[in-house]
Image (cartoon, helix red, strand yellow):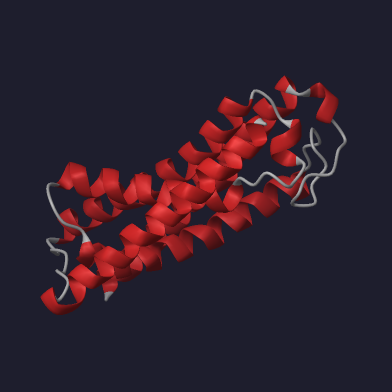
Amino acid sequence: MRVGLRIVGASAAVGVLTIGVLSRLMMFLFARLNPDADGVTSDDGFEMGTFTVAGSLNLALVGLLFGLLSGVLYLVLEPLLIGPTTFQTVSLSVGAGVVGAANLIHSDGRDFTLLEPLWLTVGLCTLLPILHVAAVDLSARRIRSTRNAGRRSASPVLGWPLRAGLAVLFVLAASSLVADVNALNG
């Protein structure tokens, strides 16, 4: 139980760093590359190109909450991981990155129709959740190794159907992401 709480706590800190800080830097880059979008209200209700303390604190809070959720989800999904450690980290991170990007990127809003270059915008919005989940996984592994607490394995009866469901979720998210990017390309 204590190891799980430490993992969730570490994940919250990772969320502040990745979602709070890295997304703020990403937005700064987008603002510099797209001066025409300066002052436009984003899909999330923020004024593009404007950096405020309140906006930065809001992102840090969102990162904290997202990190807490990520830590809990990690503890739920961790028993389903299979294969060598590197494969586990990559598959979990890329899977979450594609699902996260599919939820972030959409062709009917202002954010991705105004911000250019599209490849960089889509790439960074996909890379951010990948980095977040990889950092959550690595911090959880570090906590487990310092506490000598091994991870649980999924029940053979439930493990494979759950893995299959996650694979379907990944395919659906990837299809949605590809469709949105194609629509944005025009």
